[in-house]
Image 1 (cartoon, rainbow, N blue to C red):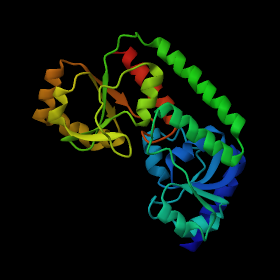
Image 2 (cartoon, rainbow, N blue to C red; image 1 turned 45 degrees about the horizontal axis):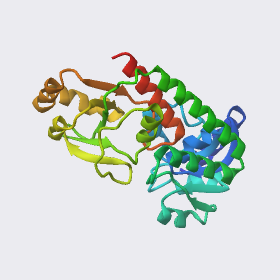
Image 3 (cartoon, helix red, strand yellow; image 1 turned 180 degrees about the vertical axis):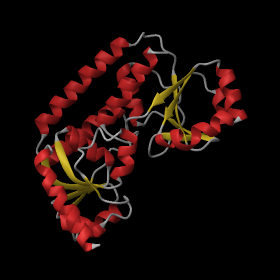
Image 4 (cartoon, rainbow, N blue to C red; image 1 turned 90 degrees about the horizontal axis):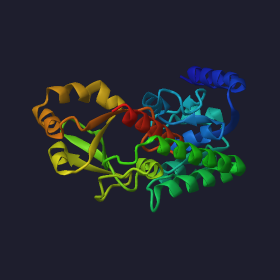
Length: 282
């Protein structure tokens, strides 16, 4: 096992010459990891990177970051061999355990309080200030705002309120609400979120699918990896979901997922781009 760990470390440092700017930072927060990559900084190690890449098609976080294991149980041996100078995340109890390896700091975008778009900017600027990339962050935020303006211009301006759901299983969904990352993107696009009920830490509410007909708006189904691999087929055979589709009379959109719904600005932008492209085609 130790030989394998050393081999992984060796291969990682070979890859450094092909990556962006390398900072010896490890993180178990995906919003942190993708924001670092947005700033052209390649994180040294990321917890549960394989799961994240399954959602995002390996296109947001720098490809040479090392998989560090589960967020709650990172590979401590590998982490100590990588000798990071800083470990970032939002798990205080885990941070306390990791202080013997490197300094740790609590930083997270969630839970979002107040305006989601402002929260995303504040999070990005705080992280950039910590690593000395303030001006780069300000420039990128301005570019993102310009891109959102272009996307908003492509919309007709008379879209129905949207009900954005992600299937938890074939009987329950998560609905994204006002303190979610996706809400921040909707606000920038000038779109209305039909869901205004209380949500949890991640900005979602859990609802049974038989409650969906009572919610007015256009249904947007996130086709997550979980949906594609196991939920979709069961729904196609399920009478309750088929009855709901008939009630909706086709007023439903299936949205490909190539972003992380608890990510940062990069995921918010990819969600917005995918949503606008899909709405244009329907």
